[in-house]
Length: 490
Image (cartoon, rainbow, N blue to C red; front, top):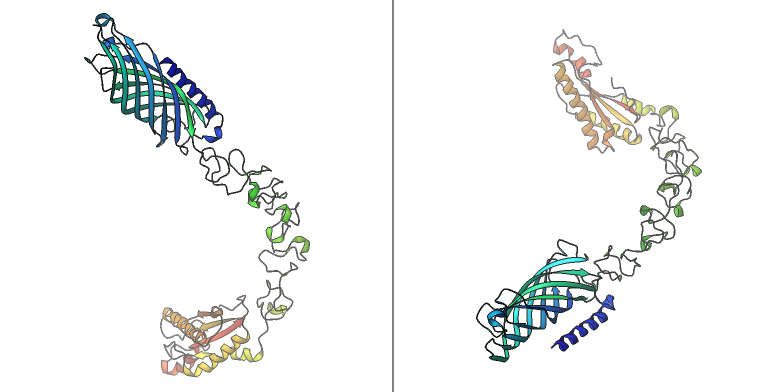
């Protein structure tokens, strides 16, 4: 019997050396879920020959477990054991003895402290386990009265529970030590079937080997469990941590680094920027002077988009549109820069802020007035020809602003007449808009109520006698001026 046990231990030791010699084949983790354990056992019997009080001396055996990862907390395993047990009776059972061989097949559930409370790759990993299954036994027993029980063989149920500690040496190899309480469904292994079922303490010491290939999602040669960059693109060279190589150490991986041998900054794809202006030196026409991206890294003092080295007007005010030479544009070519030209689309003299001067015919039209009926704000048919002429004037001077000034006579309250004058000015604007005036925003209306009469009226006279004078005061007048709004608003 001991010869067979010795052979079993020798085979287990040789297999351990073979498996541990190639650690690349194993990678114990949640991704590699199969584990093989080979171990030697020390078995201690407790039964009728010891009055169910003490355990016998140690006998030897061995076994093998195949475990499967279920979750960070649990493993499920199938275990096979083979061993021997023997003991001699004492007291009233002096002379009784037995010698038995026994094997078990047990399904085990392991509660792990590692992978849950401790890290999965912690060196020390405590665990608890329970199992159930069947046992086979063959026993030779002699009773105290000299009767023999020879080659008694039987199968029965078995269960065990215990605790152990795993010692992790590498991704491939670990050792473990555990103690289990084993009970079988029979009480005749010692030749007596009079008390509790036979029980055993089983102490196991062995090696564990993790089977399978480590999961490597990005296929960079570094297992996911150790891979700090598990989503590295296929084909990218990585370091020992599974992260893309960064030759110049600037924090930008070589495969994304446009300057992989020069330390740079991330926002410039790993390229250096000596002057810190946000333009990579390789694209910077002035690499030692801070500039702007719009001027290829060169300074632009006035911020007009033209580099100082090309700017003929380097002091242009902020916000002014400039040409390729950095000077203010002059679209109408009248010699007055657009930023100073009130009429940048129409040439005019500097004396009129760059706007064309009004011709005599236009001035004569602007002197005309639109008259209104008493207490009315309706444009009469007879004045529409004048307003059509105003439309033509606005087309001739597209940059000018037209002030439309409404007035009323003195009949009624000041508040009422103010509102009436505003409605009259608005009525004229509405007609001009209907006739297609471009950019209606340049039509400005103002109401002056009764405050600016053309004709002084003696308010003590009757309305009939003042009707003609009052009719002249019920009017809308016009003023055309430059877009800088230098209008007579009084």
